[in-house]
Image (cartoon, rainbow, N blue to C red; front, side, top):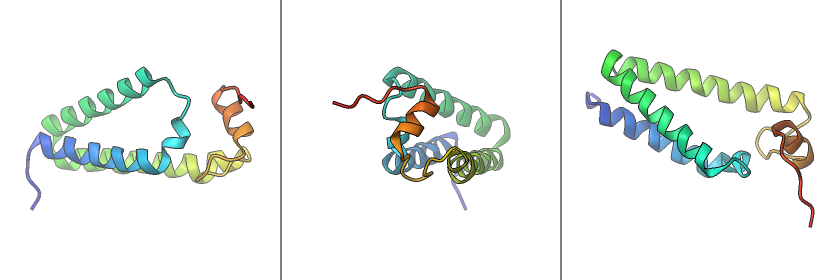
Amino acid sequence: MLPNTIWFDVALLLFVYGICTIFFGHFEERTPKIRRVIKIVFFTTLVAALSALFGHAAVFAFLGIMAVFVVIIHAWYLPKHGINGLTGEPKEKYYALRGWTLNVD
C-alpha cells in the first residue's frame, strides 16, 4: 500500500525527474537555467494539485501520459528528423531543430 499523501506523489515526480535528468539531460544542455527551474516548479505544482484534488490515480495517469509523450518524441519525432532519440546526434540537426546555434571552436 502506498502512502496516501501529496508529498509521496511530489517525491515520486522529483525522483523520476532526477533520474531522467541524469540520462537525458544532454537534450536540455542549452536551455536557459531559469526555464529549467520554471519547468520543475510548474510540474511539481501540477502534481501536488492533481494529488490533492484527484489522488494517486490521477498522478500515476499523468506520469504515464507524460512517459508516452517522451517515448513518442524520442522514438518517432526525433528519428523522423534524422536525429538519434537517445544521443541527440547529429548535433547539427538537433540544435537546428531546437533553434540553437552550434558553436564550433
